[in-house]
Length: 86
Image (cartoon, rainbow, N blue to C red; front, side):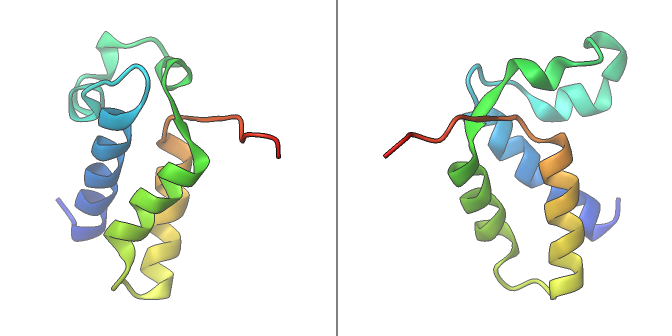
């Protein structure tokens, strides 16, 4: 497994672990046939928390690699919860 792919899986694993309801992302990734095609829509995590998780994993990463990781994670990540209105 390539280093960037492992990074994406680690980030997604943490996001889905913290999502509501939580889930085992590695299991979903390795066993896609066991899940409905829109399974990710059933899990939510705030946008701010998702971005904080990404940042914590990519802080020392080259900008091009960081962009790849962010695009992959935000496409596969849990749904955003709505931001609180101020």
